[in-house]
Length: 249
Image 1 (cartoon, rainbow, N blue to C red):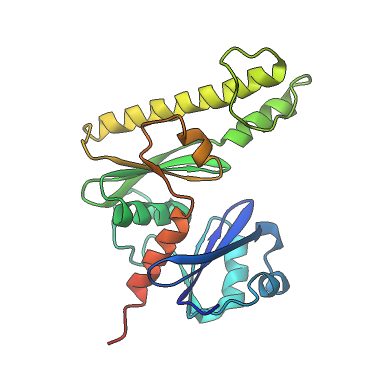
Image 2 (image 1 turned 90 degrees about the horizontal axis):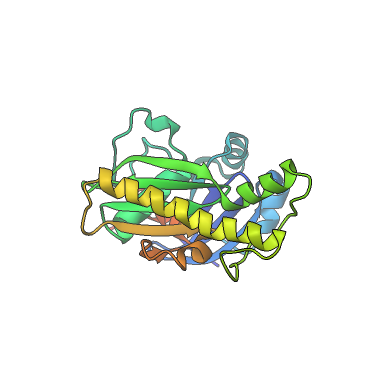
């Protein structure tokens, strides 16, 4: 497949690849981030061809390996590369590239002001002001991280496969953990959103978009979340790519 962009979202656990035109993400693949290297990349990207590579990475070692592999064709998303949104943050260099990509996507595709909730290893909230500027965020433990910690640090609590509990009152240890995970986690998300809305002055048209592995499940019973977009980070990379590769006359 030939396309304009190869989009690469490097996370701590997995790296997601998307082949995209200027207008949409066409196909996706992924691999463990720990496997990134020339041979694995060549095999995983076989059959794809692109003009430009756009990368967001939170793993510096992986960023270096990608730079060696892709060379000058690679645009590494940072706060200072031109994002199409403002960045009003005391230390912009400390903002994760994936969070900036999410902010770009919510501002351009959904509107500002907006909040992106990214359910990954950590759950992050990233806020875009009414003036379409990234202004800050919130970081909390991810859902799987919390339940794994319970299992690892207690002698009798089992590892559970996350799913919707049948009731708030657990009738077994596993059901009790599921209830705490689902109901408790949604309560945390709701409470953070309420605090963010207050600080933003309770805007009438605040767009709240969720992404990440657990987004659809958690958002299914949170009416405060307006939509779920599994490709939000890749879409942000695509939009940044468009800014740096304008249409030829």
